[in-house]
Amino acid sequence: MPPNPPVMTKSILKVLNGEALDQPPVWLMRQAGRYLPEYREVRSGAKSFIDFCLTPDKATEVTLQPIRRFNFDAAILFADILLIPMTLGRKVWFETGEGPKLDPLSADDIAGLEIGDVEAILGPVGQTVANLSVALPAETALIGFAGSPWTVATYMIEGGGSKDRWNARRMYWQYPQAMARLLDLIADATIRYLVMQARAGAEVLKLFDSWAEGLPPPMFEDMVIRPTRRIVDGLRAAGITCPVIGFPKGAGPNYIGYAERSGVTALALDHGLNTQWALDNLPERMPLQGQLDPAALRAGGEALDAEIDRIISAFRGRPHIFNLGHGITPDVPVAHVEQLVRKIRGE
Ligand code: CP3
Figure 1 (cartoon, protein in one colour):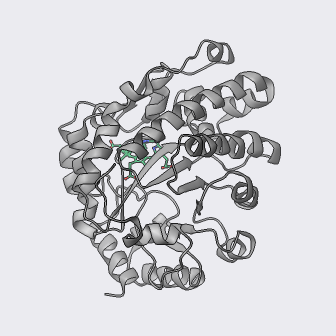
Figure 2 (figure 1 turned 30 degrees about the vertical axis):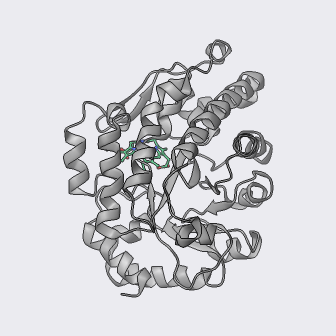
Figure 3 (figure 1 turned 90 degrees about the horizontal axis):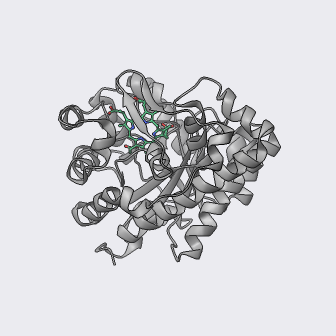
């Protein structure tokens, strides 16, 4: 068993268990990243971004960096959602200034895909989690994560990022069986990957569906809700009881069906979602995380303080974890993150 202290001493776990705290716990998406000089230093010594993610000593170190500086209430494992395509035999690489690249996937290619030895291919990530569960302070929760199948599939089909994910959307309508098979394969590989993370000591699991925006209802049901449910059910069947945070970014009113049917414990809300609408329409006892605009953090100053106040008062009385509505950007001054943490903690 992972050498962690009793779970309920950690504020994030209390909130994920449905408690509303006077002062919300806080962590930031992409908190280990390029806005930190000590991250850039370790990053510059890595052969490639993938190699960096698969080197446990380096990945452990950069996961700890934001905890040392800001004492966030949770650490998120340093890795990437685009490691999973490797377990399906696909090549993934990152080009500086351009982001992720993969060999584009056609409907015909999908028939030939098979799940490889997930635990071996991504074994170094399991080692990073194990290192972290020993190295983290007793009050800091450890979050493991993966991409949700739809978002991972869009990168696999498009061969990288894309503006409107046209080929992936078209594949859903034109080759539904191939698409369903691809999502099932990604979900099943992801279950094995997350089971490995939980057994190594991850206490919370998060599913990133960064491209959940703009999907018509039947497609949102098939591509976002159902594959998420498959993962949560697979985890529970394997005996993993960790809370799961789902992040269907940009889902808008589709957050309602996601909350009801995906099986996740908690919802991460993007900054575009109307706060009052979320409070009125999402289950009252469901823990909510979010939803500061990353641009407000970049701006800093009084506007940042006022927006933090607005978010904290809106969610008061509900189980709430303070976070951004999307990842921190590389141009954010460290002083603005210090300001945010001081403000939330009333220091
Ligand atoms: O601190 C953390 O949040 C943990 C680590 C983490 C990374 N990526 C590290 C990373 C997490 C949780 C992710 C998730 C991720 N990766 C998502 C979902 C969240 C989101 O942002 O929507 C997505 C879509 C990806 C795919 C990905 N990885 C892209 C599109 C890029 C390039 C874009 C960019 O910002 O350059 C990455 C690279 C990446 N992943 C970096 C980091 C710190 C920056 C690359 C570097 O340091 O060279």
